[in-house]
Image (tube, rainbow, N blue to C red; front, side, top):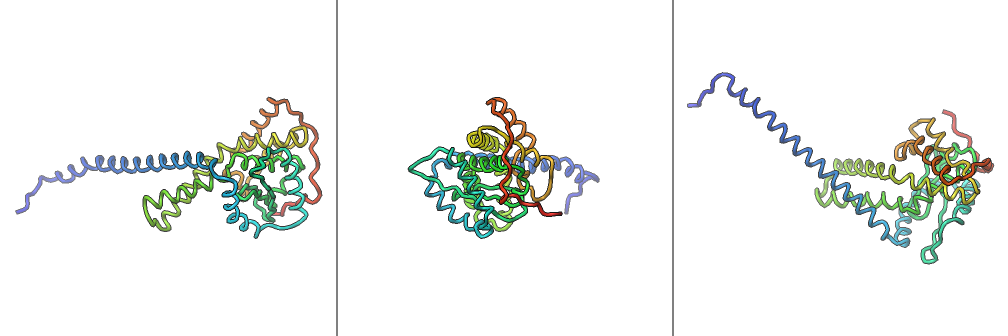
Length: 281
């Protein structure tokens, strides 16, 4: 015969155990999230170390995958030719390694996205949307020098290596994790890349400033693009998603200009072939 409990006993027993179960669940979830963050930190650290061991020959092989994707979008034109002429001027101030010669080139993509990228294969991607924001040659050269800074610090390989390591580790832990896992990996990779980019942009800015001064003898145009960027918003401004706040970049660049006593003279006008009229909304 079933034993009957006094009225309210079962409810009281359930109420007493509910906090315990909740705390256990929270503890498990918290431990899992902490493990994921620790794993992500380890992947970042490993990628940062391994990137310096990747020889230029391997990097060029990686470029054979990435470059054709952008070449299909690029537009061979006087604009692209002029961009490469400007890039060549900056390259004369880069250190050279006879054992590993580089061949940096610009691919000009006629798209309204306001962004520039450094990708494996020694290619810099300049979008029409970014070019339309340029008001002087010096301003554009600062952006090109910034992208060369990413090559110098191998930042373009860090993001790629981190993404590959994330996929390998998660596939090893969870096997074929399907579409849901792929979304999770994509989200973690994006977060990781964003945080890393925030920490590395200052180095690339400093590198670009140094090239700008070596090319023109002064620092005019170093902050112009970032200052203008801080005053505008829009969904096509990809710079804002992975880069530090524009005003912080302006402040830091001005500090460097003052620290090194760089003169700031009149910037050069933008070449006619690079004067792009922004599209009307």
